[in-house]
Image (cartoon, rainbow, N blue to C red; front, side):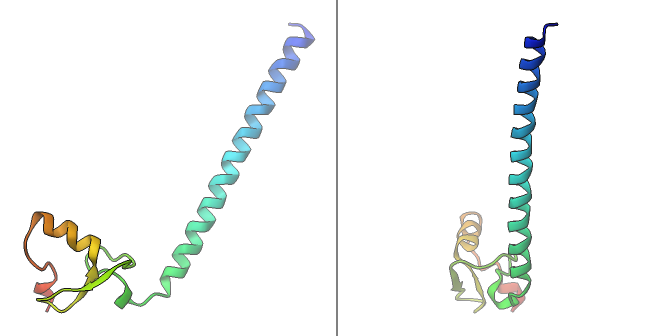
Length: 91
């Protein structure tokens, strides 16, 4: 193998290594954001969490039969398959 071929392979390997380092750094940043978000959600009281999926309610609504709050998107999905108040049994 000539020096030129070895040099090209080394440049290619170095480029792949740099790309991998950028990807790892991006994953670490995303994990850090996720952990910060999870830490922030720990302080939220149950009244702001959807009782069905236990996620933060973005558009809370009061259900007419159970008089409980739930996230609109969660209830809309439920109503596509059943025509009842899923939280009525918890009253």
